[in-house]
Structure formats: structure tokens, C-alpha cells
Length: 357
Image (cartoon, rainbow, N blue to C red; front, top):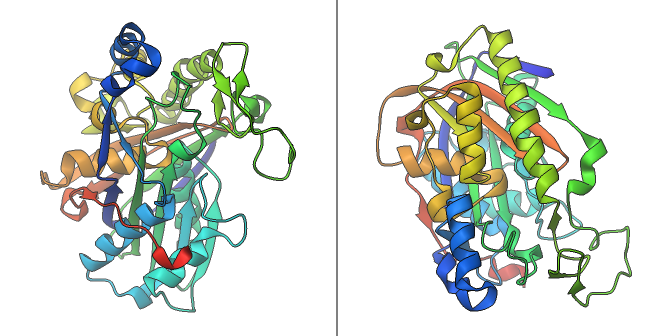
């Protein structure tokens, strides 16, 4: 595994924005049948998902989170020298959405901005990237924004995905400090399985694929412009590769699950969380869950769990183990200490960038 170690950078603020629209899975009775929906609910643990409005993009949700975290911080916008936006649902093909966010937030020209195309592992991959840049630059602080509106590329006929994925955005403020605040991260990648989670068309390969939805081998109506997940491949990866990385990381760190207050894990589904708990012997009360009310929120899963559980419940410093895994296939984990005082309550918003239309 590839590892990253950082000492003098802290999380100075964290905010998460979710759409106001919450869709209970029961609304899909007429689409998929009550029996199928009940089975889905029991298997995944998802009772409802957050759903973006048609004109609301991932960056709109990330922007609202960023405004909130900056307004509640002692840092100034001129202190932000690095902005990274992690998403697989950008505003445009060109330019990177980070430049749109730079403009909307009113950041300094002395700022490095770009996008990272990642999903469920994106928060941790983004952390590694932004921490490395912050550590090796003159910037005082940096802003990591994640956002996804998964609904934009889901077939409404896909019972395996449309009830599972929610939409949201997050903003994490990072600041240099003289106080040692260790952050350790670890990564693996399996590009051999890049087709396991894929949207085949919509970019520059398969440019002329038909947009009409037809029945695939599983009987679900899709087009190549819809995201497709090979469920068994991803499930096997989640309960085999992911716990192996977590165990290897714990071995290198010379730690056990008892050394952590909480495990903030990607909210793939309830069954996978239970398998990770069992394989690593983690007490279930150490694994907070948000997927029951918000679904699988892709790159926002880790910050969403933190805001949902600690935004209104301050516990001082907590030692957390984080883990994200998904499209790529990619997987990452790590540990850090965060002061719950800097975790802000969830924001609900339907706002979108009107000037962009």
C-alpha cells in the first residue's frame, strides 16, 4: 500500500450541505413493486435518499458547504491558497469546476485550483493531495470540496442504484499549525476492474452511443449514458480488498480497533458495514451510520457522517479511522484526530448558481 504521513496540518472546519428534498424508498413501490423495495430496504438499510433539484449541481452543494465553513472560521478567504474539488459530476467538461467555485467564493488570485475525478474514495484521495500541496507551498490554508449528484446519471428504472445513492456536498478547511496533529493515510488501486462502476458514454469515448434505454442482461432499462455497477464485483471487492487494506494499515500503525473512538466508513450499504465490523472486530457502536436517511453519498460519505453525528454533539477531540472505496476501483483509509467543535451542523439547501444558466 502507498502511505502518506503529515504532522502539522489540522482540520480547521467541516461543513456539509444536502438538498432539502428527501425521497423515501416507499415512493418506489409503484416502480419496482413493494416486495422488491422492502427487500432492498432490509438489505441496504437505506430508508430515504437526499435528492438534488434538476438545476442543482454538485458544485452548488459544495459551494454552500464552503460558504458555511468559511463564515464560521477565523480564517480569511485570502488565506486559502489551494482549492480542490472532488467530483464525478462536474458543471462542465471544460473548465474544471474548481475555477467556478474559486470565482463564486471570491478567493485570491494567488490560489491553486483543480478538480479530482473520484467518487467514493474521493475524500481521502483529496486529503492526500491537498495535504501534500499545503505542506509544500507558501499557503496558510486550503479548501477541499467534495460533491456529487449521482442521480444525474442513474436510470430511473435501475432498482439496484436509484434508491441507493443520495446527493450532497462538503467542504473541509485545512490549516497549517505548529502543534503536532498527525494524519496518516493509505491507498490502493485496482485499474483492472475499472469497468465495475462505469458510465460508458458522455465523455470522449463512445461519443455516439444511442441514448435510448434498452433492457440489459439483468432486465433493467439503461443506456450507456447511465452509470452501471457490477454488483457482485463491487461487493466482493468491498468485503475482501477493503478489510485487507484496513488490517494492513492497522499493522503498520501498530494499532487495534480499540485505539479509535469511531470508525467513519464509506456508507456503501448496511450489509457491507456489518461485514467490515465483523472482519475487523469493530464494535458496532463505534461505526456511526447516516445511510439510513441519506443513502450512499459517494465522495461525501465521510464528511456527511461527521456532520450528521457531531455537528450538534460536541465531544472534544476524537480519534477516528476513516475509509473510502469505490469506482476505479480505488480504496483508501487513514486515521486522524479532529476537534468536534469545528464540525458544523448539516445545511439543507435547494440553492443553485443562477448565473450559470
